[in-house]
Every structure is written in C-alpha cells, then in structure tokens.
Image (tube, rainbow, N blue to C red):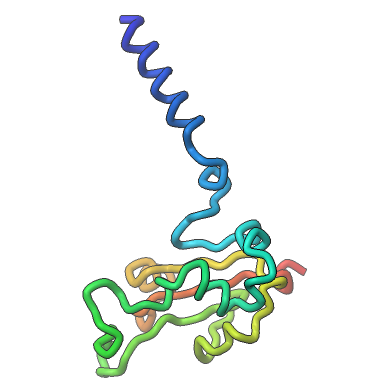
Length: 138
C-alpha cells in the first residue's frame, strides 16, 4: 500500500518542479498577455497592437475552419470581427490598439467566440480582446 503512495508523491513532485516558472506565473497563457510578459519583451513592443502582433497574433486570425474572407457572419449577414474593450468600454474598432501605449497596459485578455458570446452577449461572435490599463486602477 505504501509503495503506490510513494510513487504518486514522487510523480507529483516531478510534475510540480518540472513546470517552468513562467507557466506558474501565468506567462505563456494563450488567452492572456501580462505586464510581466510585456516587460520581458522590452522596447520591441510600444503599443497594444504590437503586443498582439508579436505575442499573440492568433487573436486577430479568423476562427478555426474559416478564411479571412468568410469570417463569421452575424444574423444580418455582416462580417463579425474581434471586438475591443479597454477598461470595460467598447471601442469603435481594432485601430484603437495602435493608440494604446504598452506602458499603460496591466493585462490583455482574449475571449474566443464561445466565451465572448457567453460573457458579452450576442454580437461578439468574432471574439473579444479586453485590455486593462493603469488608468482603470487609478
């Protein structure tokens, strides 16, 4: 009886200690860009647009199985794209990403199609990028 428990403990300790520190701190999460990750990227990232383009380009790609020209359509037949929220305020388009300084970003999150519709409602079928800035915390 003791031998299986000892083996299980040994296996768990290998898993815990083999996990990279950056994974334990939330870096490398495909749906999140943290302040730590932005700091590590250094001066190569000046804006939110560059952060997404360099660190998570898939956030701006069409959902799996769709081409850019046939991106998700809403019930009215219009093309549905990723919607941007900065400090919980919906933005008119993704071009606003170029105006947000990377130094002001605390965190960026991506909500895929399913989570975006679940949390933000209909009309978010293209996904959502949420940015929290230092301005919100002040």
